[in-house]
Image (cartoon, rainbow, N blue to C red; front, side, top):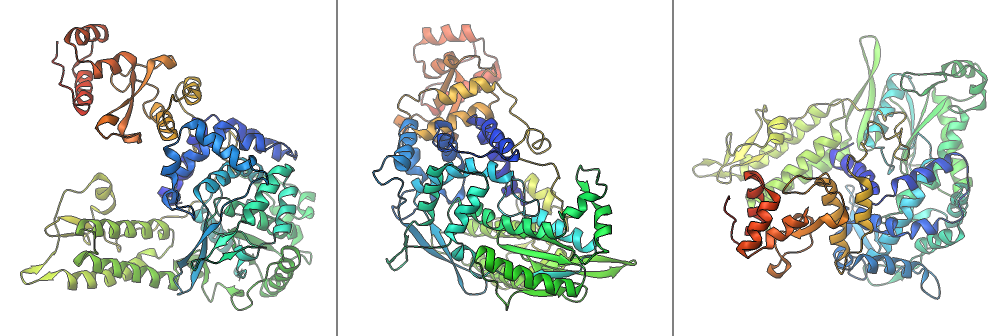
Length: 635
């Protein structure tokens, strides 16, 4: 999993602890595992803590600044008080005469590498907040029922885990016939009636919640030309809850494929042992089943993109026909006959999630060989070359430094995603040649070339990643490094830890450590009235408490009561300071008073009480300087 996505995924666990919701989600997961039904989920959905947690998670999302049809963003919510945000969400969901009615969704066409576009639906920010509240409650219930063979848009699962599973099935299980399926317009063709029945089958029997989900699915869509469309099927891409609903739809397919072989009842008639990682070893049952007429098959699915693996061509052809008919009959989804095919990976590459994968003989074995797939490689080349041109001639409103940073972020993004391809170094060298051809030509001057081998001092990350590379170049003048796309090392794709689960204490071991602070005091701080401050201030105050380990930022003493905790604005609001995280700091009450003290007698009184050392006084004076007050001399 790319580091940014992995950190964002783990941060959601931390956020749930900030607002005391982790135990609630764990209980929902455990009850769902036990097969219980849920009838009063809206009480949890509209709880104060769940709403504030939803605000926190959306604020951390990069798309939170994208406006919907009402032109509002997360900043417009952040300036409201905690009570106003909670009250507004509750009023939107249950306050109207006609019940919940989401505002129109803004349609935006996103270009695809093949020249076509992908329709994206952008809900209004308040509707996104409602969807996030629902998703947080539904997700643990659904996770308990989801298949282990599904990897897309699920907590703790990633493209890397899906590719690792594919490698194992090809290289270790020798399943060399791969069926590549393509569902025509999956997100546009999901049956609303079927989806509601699947949600009910998950154990979600809260009729109020199901009504709200229906309204979300039926939300009108405002097209770019101003027309309104009223969908009768499909889940809009871009909605926060859409990936979860898509997984609910296809979960039925996962379990049907598993029932044909992987979880066939015949397996349980034979001894099942445990592997070292705790997973079940069903080899005895599989060995016996091979003597029957049953078709061996395994599925790997990432959202609506899935592959099925078989041992023989005959079995693969039969499975392709059976799955196509099953999707049409059970889920009312049509498979593209042109794009769905059976691939023998000893002879041809099979494509999945931007990789093309094949097996080849090596040392008497069939070993996986993978590359960036051709379309993606060409698309990445075009994007890098286009950005490389901007280095020599920056776009309007951007500097050369801005363009270099964009280029470097693109390089790191490509390397992070594709480094699990076994031949990624060959593909990246192809990209490197294309980029250097452009840079060498465009940065040439009458005095030479601006591409040089030395420049500013590299950061620790840059030294660790590119410090040993002979490909590293700098731009003379700005001295900025240009990260070499060709300098990348293959990384073995890691399998998902078998027992990893975000919704059980045991499953989080090794993924996430619980907060090592005074959690009860943190929760009291979270529930404390904000006295006119906005929700951004309240949320950032909780983050600071955790970031400072529940201690005063100046003295390092641990907070023991709520009255001791004072939140100080580094740059006062009267001087233009705001409630953003970087402008706040938590200190003890006497420290806060000393920061703002002006009278000499009062300053001496607090100094004698606090007995600050040199380092603590230096921090205090830094805060006083930001507040426009003179420094305090060392007594």
